[in-house]
Amino acid sequence: MTLTGHRGGITGVAWSPDGRRLATSGGGDHTAIIWNLENGNKVLTLRGHYDVECVAWNPEGTRLATGEEGTGTHVWDAATGIEIVRLDDGIGEWNDRIVLSVAWSPDGTKLLTGKWNGRATVWQVDTAKILTALSVGRGSATSVVWSPDGMRFATGDWDSAKIWSVQNAKKLLSLSGHSGLIESVAWSPDGKWLASGSGDETVKLWNVTDSR
Image (cartoon, rainbow, N blue to C red; front, side):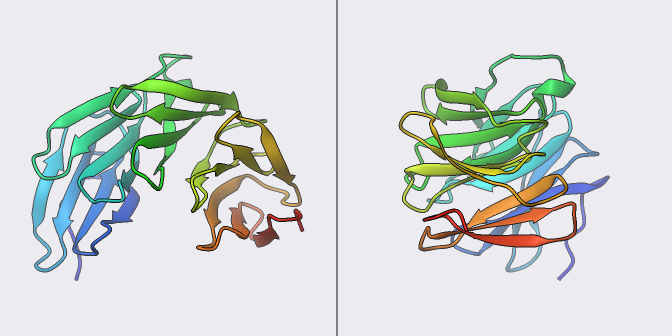
């Protein structure tokens, strides 16, 4: 199956939790699209963005978050296409406010965002309240991800992958060893390992119980 409909480069893809839909973000055409994977048809086209950088489903598959340039993170009703809330701290110039990565908490009540200006922010979605905001290090917060238990989150930047406490925003571990920008981070299902992918053409697997 080939899905066509975006007019420009596709910057993000995400499966719905039930595996029946796919969300895609089009940086060039300023839209996100939800697709029916049984027939390849468009279900919804979400407009009102600038360049869309990333997409993420909530655990129930009822909401879709999209991160973009300039106007923060949008949360949409995945059935109707209505925008529920917009999350934007308004900090920095236009380029600094590019949202590069979004991730839902395991309980679906919070969103974690990573931005071009190096800020990682935890939001209470329904109230648009900032619960935690921090600078991850040198450069951009290129990738953010929750731990499976929802108690920690990981970030990637130019310096290292880092693990943070959700409760107090304390840095728990700094995982150094890459020689390039860390483009992506991902937890293992049991929460004991973190994978990091870098522009140095390597992937590292870290034992996050002792930082090996």
